[in-house]
Image (cartoon, rainbow, N blue to C red):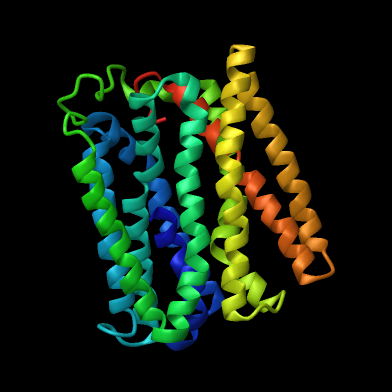
Length: 331
């Protein structure tokens, strides 16, 4: 649901932008508004997860996602008129969505740290990321078909229902004792000590570079395939799903390999080898995709590049947990 809500606009903007009078630069600024809210509230959301537990914080994040996505289809060009007003409304709504979604992965990492042994952290975080890649694989073709049949606004109305359903299932299935009253759920060490952790600082810088490339794919791959590689809207939707479908298989597999190597070498070396290997492969394939002479060759190389790039997620998050002590969410 998290990636469904953040990726839907990357496809919907193909029809939304001309109708609302938005330029490509303004669309990029709207994408960045989401990322700004997402970045600013990562640490606070992780701290809330450490303090109140995953059950409450992730449920609240899902509710925010439903409301902001619903309003994204309703307000711009509907309740407010004009290109400037629509642009401003989208900036605010996407920022608010970013604030809500900021909790997703830090608090999921907290849940993994609470519920599972360290020997399974990379695989378990990989399974969380595989859920996001599976959602991403369905997003582009789903939104493309919805836009063709019911218009871009309907794509936001329908996708707004998904996190609401998940919140209900999550709230009913997760034990109530995973809350602030659970002595295991609360951090005993002050979160600000994480700033003294040199290894965590380097890990964060590395993850910044990794994520910069990832979000180029998340927000701009559909437009690139349609406008540069000349796929149709529908075929571009299916083509955009291919990298994330491959990643759904690759991410847990490399997470499992990371855990196996970590146990064998008794330390971070196993996680480091997997992450470094995947990053080198991803960068090489991205170059080949950019230089590919045909659309299908480009899609093949880019799809493998995305799969390798996302396969670093399990080792990254497992290392963050290993370095954090009681503050997995804040880390």
